[in-house]
Image 1 (cartoon, rainbow, N blue to C red):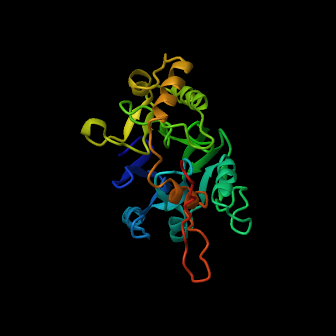
Image 2 (image 1 turned 90 degrees about the horizontal axis):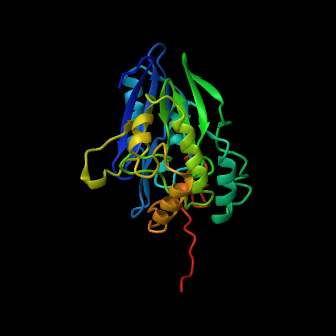
Image 3 (image 1 turned 45 degrees about the horizontal axis):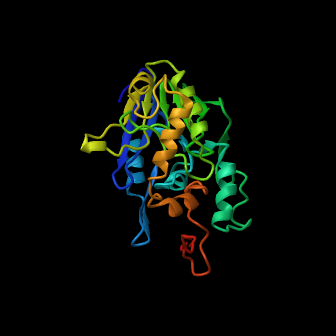
Length: 291
């Protein structure tokens, strides 16, 4: 998809309903990879780089040079291919500085030792502060903290295009859940208000689409469309109304299928847990006694 100064290419992982993007500068060929997916078969205990290799092939075919690998947050629904792509391209892996809080929380959940995770933003090459700017070739980009779904959620504003992670879905799907550790519906409401203050014609790119009602896949909307049509929070929706609706819905949602495998890999920027003496990495699943 060609914009004024950038080209945006979408990649879709059907298994996790995740969109990844390559945003490239039309003038220099510099590119940013956003939210790449590492394919994971939980039943077989295997990972593969099929989706990430499609991104690499696209970069090579178009003579693009990746200068950033950008994560909108430590995802709970898919494993990140950031580490793999970093090894292939040398592009730095970046995320919001809130990742430190997420690492601290899940270091305890998974009982990870200091020898493997200090929870100070380790594994990532760059931790962005709110409003920090960076460049993709000649294109200016800005980081907006948009927590609420998670502590570390950020959105990337690149030449009038906003990549929002899980904070917003397409208007007919509403908004992200807020019942993960560090999630807060009040905070998400305020983050969305920040997004709604952007120009109405700002393009918004999704991280997921679950195709409600079986409609066709959609990955792009606008600030105006969200403000006027989002089923959870329009421009004039009161905060308490949104919070009540969001919290009631969250109580009906199942735990994400891949939350434990995903989070323990993604807090390491897509790097698998340290291999044990036999050379094999293992995913930990904390068990809780019910009843």
